[in-house]
Structures are given as C-alpha cells and as structure tokens.
Image: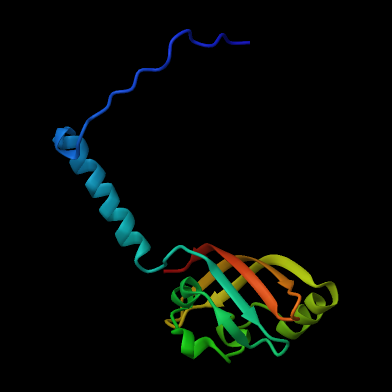
Length: 143
C-alpha cells in the first residue's frame, strides 16, 4: 500500500485573467470557442417529454425541441411516431409492451427536422396521472 505524502500538493494560482500567461489564456479561449461552436447544433440539456395514451406530446422541454429542430407549438399534439426515424421501431408493439410493464428504457432513433438521425438513450415511465414521461440523453447525431 502506497504511503500518503506528508505535505499538501502545491498549487500555482494566478490572481486575475490578466496575470495568466498569454499563451495559456489564448489556448483556453480557443478551446472554449471550439467547444461552443461544436455544441451550437445540439444543445445539451434536459431532454424530457410527456405524452398521452395516444402517443401525442403534451409537454416537451426546450432542449428536446432544439434536439429535434421543432418549436414547442409544433410538437404539442404531434405523435412521437412523427419524430421517430422511419423503419427503426415497431412503435405500436413497443408501446403495447410499455403499457403492460409501465416502465421501459433503451435506445431510440429520432429524426431531426433536417433529416439528421439522432440516437438517444431513454427512460420512460407511467406517471400517477397516467401520462408517460420520458427522460433522454444524447448518444449521437449523424451530422
């Protein structure tokens, strides 16, 4: 078993951004700008939806709207079948299984308005009010 060091690690601190070495500051700013530009097309966030027993959206988070490229007003009332990538699921069968069990999780292929396929990992459950709530996380998007 390794011994713990007797002294605390040393930390080099810079008081303000102006005291940070220019090369380090420029590298950090460049990395930040690249990360922001990569995330512009897909905003990370809370991808949640609520659907009724007819598979129609009744609630959608802002992040989910951005993920699939629709405004909230366009999604409310739309069946999730319409934003599922064609040919990727037997939706009626999966929905019937879900209703029988009350819970499901797995992968789902959505279709962005532009035609880009968006793979999400989801968890869905029947709520106390009999609506179905889903929480998703982005796995990948064919950009």
